[in-house]
Image 1: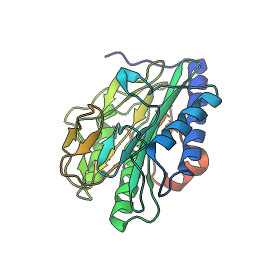
Image 2: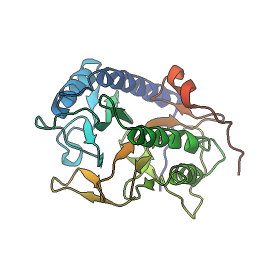
Image 3: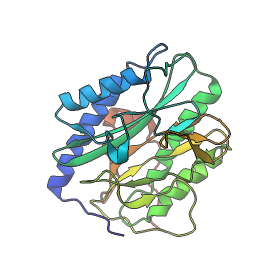
Image 4: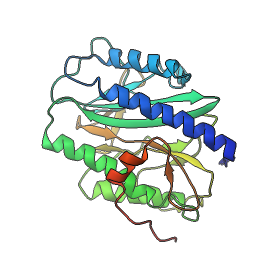
Length: 266
């Protein structure tokens, strides 16, 4: 395993890549309403990525045919945008996307409500998001990688939810997927020791039912095996000597969810 430590210059480029991506997500969030197609979301997302000087890093990645992954309801990740997939009242949709800026990648995901959703769907979305913040309490120099994994998994499972095991987070930098892999479920091993300058994409994928998933015939779309709802929440983060820097989340939004004291070093 080779985990890259980013220089000050590289970190600045990643900050900008992530800042641009967060702005695009804010724009796309305003489009999500009953009657819009996932194809329209993808077209707008690609247009905005290119308009800000970025390159969509998902487009053609290992053959993926779009710039924005659009996963609806029981779709966990990697849903392919389509003109015929029209959002309706009560759906939830996960958007997952990234861009390349000056050679450096960003990556983030959010799950959104389409109109009025059930309390059960809202709770799944809220727990998935909070599981990320529970995990990154441990995203500090001196801690071990799987402390993040264990905290995410333990929190989500405490609500009876399934934590997807077939897909994990990852390092990120000049490549979209770098070492290390970052599970969201409880691990027996400790994992690597975290160091300042590591950049990681931490991304809980949580199901209201089983943790087991299946791939559809398009070889991309991952769905829950029991057709239960799924939610996805991801940020690109930077390991520092103190609190992690959440590169794809502005300080105003971070303050809404970051309620816990840093975990003690182990």
